[in-house]
Length: 56
Image 1 (cartoon, one colour):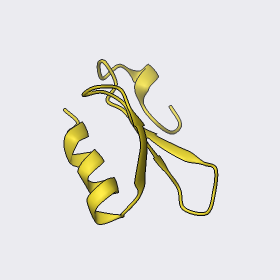
Image 2 (spheres, rainbow, N blue to C red):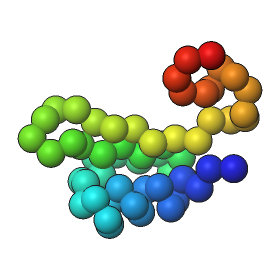
Image 3 (cartoon, rainbow, N blue to C red):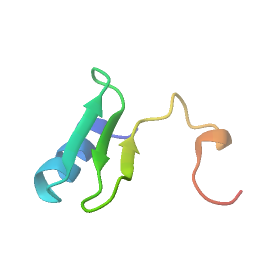
Image 4 (cartoon, helix red, strand yellow):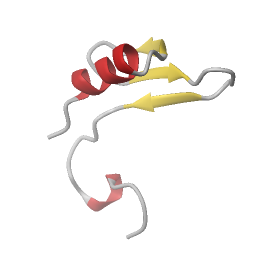
């Protein structure tokens, strides 16, 4: 199981990214410095193939 709170802490505290929004204990977004791009972190609802990154 993914640890979203640990991931959020890493991007905020270690990498120093600014958190731009969050939905309670769920998804969080961070702005990439010098861009208008935001990186969203979330945990999929289950481990089915549809939620995996990359090729299948």
